[in-house]
Length: 495
Image (cartoon, rainbow, N blue to C red):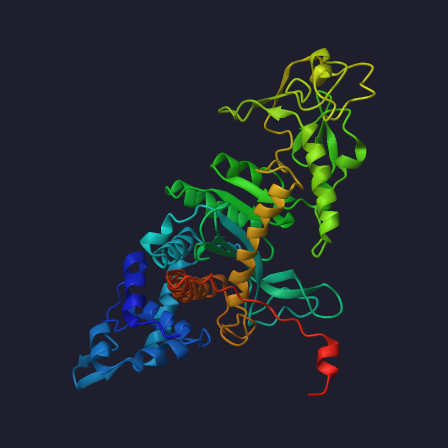
């Protein structure tokens, strides 16, 4: 798919990054032919043509433009002895100035504030106005970006990319499930549908790159908080157990304070009972009655491909567990405190310690052996829950309920974001895709790549919506893709 030059120019101009970077560059004695705006357009043209992130390719994309466009963009200028076309050395020089202006004076493996702002503005400009408020839900994840530099030799620490470090990535290939790589972590936040909401294009809203020495959830949390500070509302934030297992002060607490509602998978070490609060059992982000059956507290998520019968049984058990949960009766105050009420007082279970609950119908669970020395949660109507209780595991839906399972299924949007930039048939960010070393040049190229990817997603989404509208007008159902599965029997049958 070819993206028109006018679209790329509108993204560059709407972001305002070219003028901002230009103001950071030194004023030399001689006139610099290549402007930052034209350089960014060359990078976008390169990636739109599915070419690798080489400066030679950006230079080739610019000099391949029609002559009027070259003259307008400054690729060709009138010099003393006639017209002069941009050279690769000039492209390399301007790109070096940009990288130096956006890099930190003391590199530490994280992007500078200027570079982070450039990435944010480029991605925001790549999202049309009609889609900016289509959804506040974000699916987050991180992936590996291998540097072109060779890792340090054994027993040494010096290499061509000093900010890169050894990291771990999962592999679906036969053999070990994981392997080591030398490079960076790319984190991205992708727009996804609201719960029970209409379809939206899965656009990359924010991204960041950091050295493998740093923690990617902490790096992305800072970007999302900056996004909220800019006035863009945070809704559901869907992440896997790699985010949920982090220290609450690094991920859950700041995002929750910024208005986000977490929907995440819990790490196996965080599942089940994790202590008590005033006698109530802390489990899976909630408080439960002390008499809750132990097998219900040990419920975990369903594995893929679970038979329907087992799904029904699991859902019944999670429904039984929800009846033993202490119900929230207030929202968080300014300090993060809230109050919860005994499930027997809320008429969800029958308990001898609450005589009024024993008049309820017997279709509710009944506590047969109440505590001999009732704790505060049993003899008080309500208890106060401070913000540090279940701060890491508290989330929007009860874990692992059907509502949580349906909501968490939207997290695959982040997986599709990375699959589109790792497809060997189109654009692959494998080692050698970018032969520049250092955090700043790699981050700038990746920001441009995600901006181009957003345009491809928009084109495909608009075409799909138009086709669905056409089929609806003709009285036909929406076109759903069916996956055919070939069996060994079908392959062995002679034609």
